[in-house]
Image (cartoon, rainbow, N blue to C red):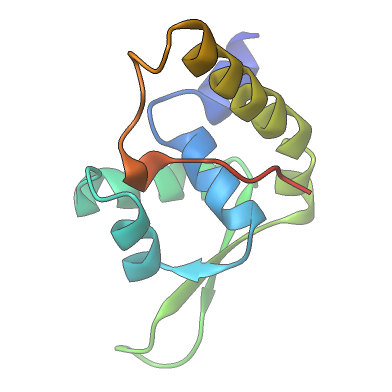
Amino acid sequence: MAAAFAAIGGKWKLTLLYWLAHGESHFAGLRRRGAPITPKVLAEQLRELEADGLVERVETGPVPAPVIYRLTPYGATVLPVVENVRAWGEAHLEHTHGETAPGAAMSCADAVA
């Protein structure tokens, strides 16, 4: 469990994996989706996911061309965990009558394929 939590634990990693499961994105796109996350924390989380081989950083050209982030094939192996956490979160919101509802920016309403 410790290895799993080290790779995907934390406030943003599962959310980032969820978003990237629905398609690649550039840094600014991820930043807009997760409004409460600071650029510094987003960069740190993406670097950690990249270091663990879950996310790939693709440079699209010389600076200042955008950098694209996408799941690696290995990163796709964690999607069943992401989907189970998402489904449990929905059930938890029903159980608590939405009292712990996240902000709209963090919403994960669609199932992961």
